[in-house]
Length: 473
Image 1 (cartoon, rainbow, N blue to C red):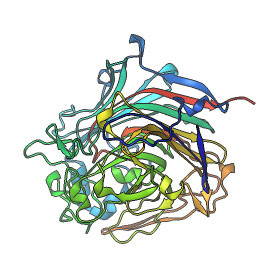
Image 2: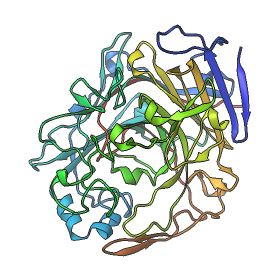
Image 3: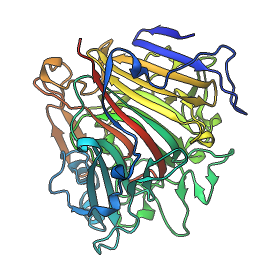
């Protein structure tokens, strides 16, 4: 039996299969689900990477690190050497940036080199070698090889993207076999010598250094120093969290790891795992989570923190207050909202994963783009509801709310949302005109992994990365 729900934003297909797993509720009504919705006549397979066989081995350790100095930034706003930080933090920002060196590497892999592994690491003593570098490599696992994303330091980054922009219409999917980027295990965020996924070493500070939430925000004293311990902690405290990009689409070519706030201005859509520390939640809710079996919300604080957020990015705040940081508005989709993308300051998660069941029970994440909009999809066994597919389609524009930079080509957009980004910095003011002008076009590039150079730590394994394109009619 297959059910289909028509939503105001499009179609959300919800498919449920009976699965007998202790502690995980399963609906009485069951349905079978094929491995991939791409079996429909709409798509044909273009690329498929399963990492089986010696010829498909990958180890980014064999490629050299290249010093990144910021002399060729993607933009001048909030990238790692962007003007936004200098306007807010003043002369102290350059001293902070100069207190360490950054190294990056990009390694193409797969058939025709269609995929790229992109990594970033910090060299604290500036001797030419990062102390705790990330890696992306194939490794043996039960059932065959997998691709392991290893981000051992909160100050590094490791992600998978495509080497070329995605087609005008596509379906991209992969299997997530394991995930260890925070959240509870057996009822606690402290496990295996880690706290919310971060390794704990005496005297070591893991903070947003040097890209804080903004002068005057809680969690630090707003003094711009070269000591990471003076900045806002990501391990615990009011800004403690871990995160992993399950699958996102960004608006620029050649994605590489960068600071958290840069990504908040560059995403079109995203599915992510956002593991907030209990300190961050405090007496509040930390947002909410949808129970897809009852279509009712419960507070995030009552969850295991292993959530799946499914959302689109809308227009940003073009005029943040003094010392503030801009970012796109966030519109979350759940079955509790009948699939309608709703604006929320705090996240509204679509479901909770069960990491303890992996890799025997994995998750399939997919994004589709067609002529009308994007579809986000995840299939797996969830804490509430057992095995099911959660799938939402969102048109590019709904009720005059656009998906940020949705247009791949100028003919898809008429310039109606163009504006000037205005920064009222503590030390200086600056304006960036034409943030979405007519005549513009923004490519689709995927991001899977840890893109943040000031947060995020853990490991994940994936396989079966597939790209589908429309079948010829």
